[in-house]
Length: 379
Image (cartoon, rainbow, N blue to C red; front, side, top):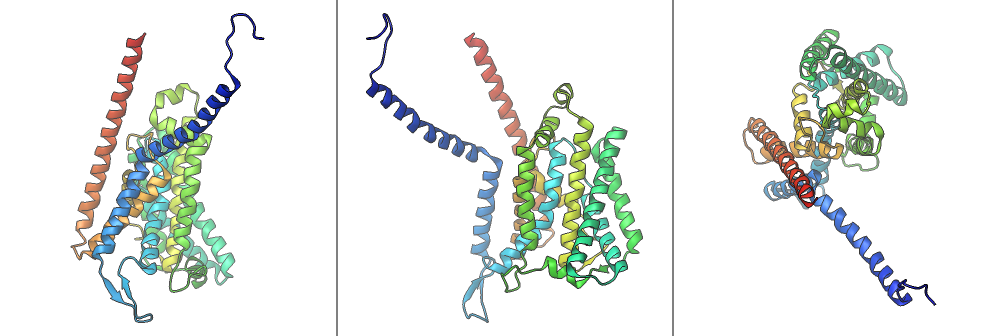
């Protein structure tokens, strides 16, 4: 017997409703995930990279492999693919750190100079220390490169916060100063690194056939760590908040100075890691290394979805942006165009990325305004 005035549903009906609800939830979640993936900047980049790769495969032609006697595509083969990813890794690693600066609303023009100074410093220290085992050599090398990169990044951040000058001005100045230090301490000479260090950077890791995946693997690991840092940590969320709305971040009690110093420190750190890999991989370091890299790094970040006004960007996008930039360069060489066209195409890619970002920002603002007006009208 039921209480007076109450209504009950039959058990069969309740069971049916529960089944419907539990059946609908996973599908709705799946649809939501698919919707987010399709709307993300990274998905668009993956599509563009895939289409460009297919075009390169079609246009690259083929050659006869003397060892196997088989016809091999000039682009779609292990050697070219690993080399392409290796070329992208040096830009991508720096772009991950630079993207964090851009998300915070700043910019770092000094990454190329930090790379050069860190690489030269490492080569000089290792030359002064003399022969060591490969493990000790690699340890000293990474400590020097990471230490120099971190120190330069911290100096940039402290100057930006302490002087309250726009990061563009500070890093433009440090770009010249740090490059000058690299020239002075190296005496404008190319300095060889110990062969044991090159053996570490060019370790085949069981692949053989002249394939050297270490830089590529480091890039992938740092991309994952960068993505986790930006999306899964409090500090990462603070970076987005700082770049998205400075005043709101201040009223929320965030340590704005610490955030700015932190992102520049990470940018310097990634430049130092890239310098270690670059000098080790190519066997030498010079004061002219990474000249112009800052443009490729910023291009990688912007093409990867980072907004120059702050509040938007990702580590995965930065890596995909670097890969896209390298594929553009590869396309120009494959098609035997004048290499100077590279600058034109990359410049156009940056402009297109900025235009898309501005259009997306305006559309989002318009949708929010319409939603607010609809809610107001409903009341």
